Length: 130
Image (tube, rainbow, N blue to C red; front, side, top):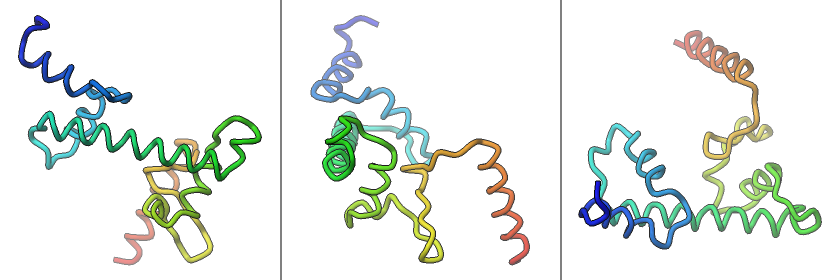
C-alpha cells in the first residue's frame, strides 16, 4: 500500500499525538461482537482517553504509594489506589464486605492452574444453586 492512499492518511492522522498503538486499540475494540466498524475519530478518541486514564492511574498510584521513595510503581500501589479512590471503584469488586478481589481490568497475579480451579468451583456453586 502506498503512503499516498487514503487509508495510510487516516492511520497516520489517528496515530498522531498518541502513545498507544492505534492498531492495538482497534483490535481490542473489534474483539467486541457488538462492533462491526470503527470510525477513525472514535478510534482516536478512545485511544487518547485510554492514554489519559492510564496516565491518571499511574500518577495517582505513584504519588499515593511507595513510588516516590523507591522510584518505582508496583502492582500493590495500583491496587491500593483503585481501592481508595472513589472514581476508580469500578476497578474493584467487593465480596462479602471483607474480601477485596480485583476485576479483569486490574487483575490479581494468579497462576493459570489456580484460576482454572476457581472457575471450576464457581461453576460447581452455580450448578448447586440451580
